[in-house]
Length: 362
Length: 130
Image 1 (cartoon, each protein chain N blue to C red):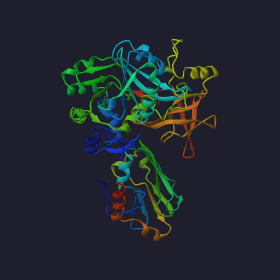
Image 2: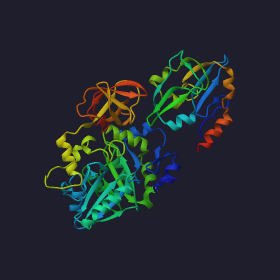
Image 3: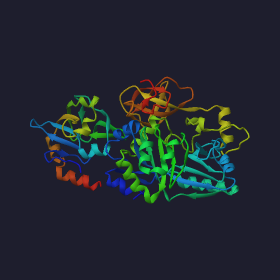
Image 4: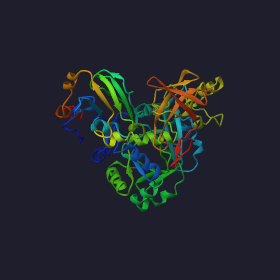
């Protein structure tokens, strides 16, 4: 038996197919995964993301600490509630995890890290925090529900009540406390929506009320196709401790300026940049029939010289798409080795789809 | 609860087999299998005329989630494949025992057919998986 979120019984009662995900028993789908995907692109869907780990960091030097810990720069966060996506690197520039950090007050930042990496993340952060006298608390008391889709915010507020009405005024990538809820306008689908943190004891009744308000129950299966269409990396698939963000399509998250900010991994990234980053992340669109999957070899100029890191069938495009790590010079057409057959694929810019629409020409 | 018709034969790897009046076999994947795979989006079928061995993978069914091999119940020659699955693989989800069939095969050795599971034995396989 794996770990269970406060919504485990609710998922089982709803007929969800449960699978192991990073040690947690999680719903992969409740019925048709494709219907769940479309519900989010077209209307509203929700995901139990309580397995993700919420950390509160407190201390007078917490901002200074995070400017050292993270590759992106929390100095960009000037308004309380504002969020930042960042990688947390080791000294070699490898990615320990990717995360979201919220600026709450001058003494308090909140961080959300991945479920599968929580133990090593907490150990690493605590180790680094000692010199800054920053305290880390793990918020096991909180559940988290992501409501996503063009109608998600309005439907969620209709359920959560008057105290959350002003959450509709949240700017993109910002959050705040509304009564007993922490609500942020963030997500992992390429659609507008909220991520709602709430007391674990309230999770089941809130889930049922969201469902009654027309928010579709969605599993990790749809979450994966939505995030991949939106061109968002999945830790463990698309990057890990053996790759730098520069070869993982995450250069945009590295704050090299100001030049005098030292952060863990900076020296290694600068060295890699000076030497030339040998590989890059690209989007692939399969031209032939089939389905791209992680670990399939990518053939560039006839040589197996790349690998798919995440692949799937895109319900929005009705074609197969992937993220792949290939040589930095690769462009245009490639082949993908699928069960010994070399099928044609095209390197395309990503995201592939977001806000309900295709972003690439088929 | 998955549907396991009593008039079909099965493999423990979740294929179903219908013995037709002329002794040929029609093969597909069970309701339990399609449900476990989820929405199917691609099916790779064998060439007509291909000679298969019992237990040999003859098709690949791919859902949004995963790719899965489908195994031949007997040795023999592929007589026909379901071309409709090329454009509408979801027929397997909608109608696993009828419109979602995968291939027809002429068994080389009729004795192999008698080794297949009946519905009760396949039910036990499904129950054991839970």
